[in-house]
Amino acid sequence: MSQLLSLTLVAETLRLSIPYACAAVAGVWSERCGVVNIALEGVLLSSAFGGVVFTLATGSPAAGVLGGILVGVTMSLGHGLLAAKYRVDAIVSGIALNLLAASGTRFLLRAWYDSASNSPAITGFHLGPTGSSGGAMLARTLLDPVTLLAVFAVALTPFVLHRTRFGLRVRAVGENPVAAASVGINVVGVRLAALAVSGAIGALGGIHLALDQHRFESGMSGGRGFIALAAVILSGWRPVRAALACLVFAALEATQILLQGQHLIPHEVLQMLPYVATLVILAIAAGRARAPAGLGKHAPE
Image 1 (cartoon, rainbow, N blue to C red):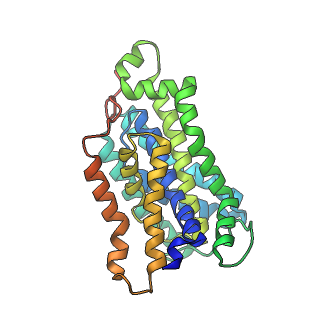
Image 2 (cartoon, rainbow, N blue to C red):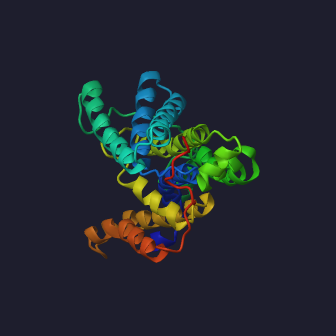
């Protein structure tokens, strides 16, 4: 039980929170511009795969990060084109992209690497001390370039949304696309730009997953995109609050990992912790958080 009050828990929580937090902030960007986004799971999964493919092709994890971001932006823009430009129902579009990511990555794994379950191993960034102590794990996590990029994106998002002209336009088209269009704002263009930012930030979460595991595994996103969407709703569509909510989900997952093998709580109960917490928190938050008024509304023709 001493592990639950140690640097190991802190390190594990921070490490596990990155995919959740990146997906949540990506969801904030998407939904603050008025586009419902349940494709966060697909962005995580496809960008993780893209990061591994580019790393294997070049031998460079830095190239893998850039490649993963490119894939994440492409997926998010695809969702934006379908939902914002061509007026496809955003829920249908998101489900389609999630299914495409799940089946497409499995197909490409078999086609390129002769495996339906995982890719060949890759090398990640090797920064910080070696060893399995809590301090060493925490130092490696804090020095990881993807972690630093994720923290920077989370910290910068509130400033961009509330202190820049672009952020003002994003919030305007998310609150009232008709009024925004009436003053000359290109609603579809702003939404696509916001979704490009969303895809880049969400991709960092998928890349972190892949580099942390040193390979791609089929279905490795494991529902994190859906839990991140719950954090978006819980936070009232505020990026920092969403990231903090993700820390709670990550702490539950870290607790589950540290308690495995101690036989204090049945293994099946431990695995349920993050998902049960998501349902409980959503039930508590239901009806209390105010979504952007223009969420799901199309731009005027």
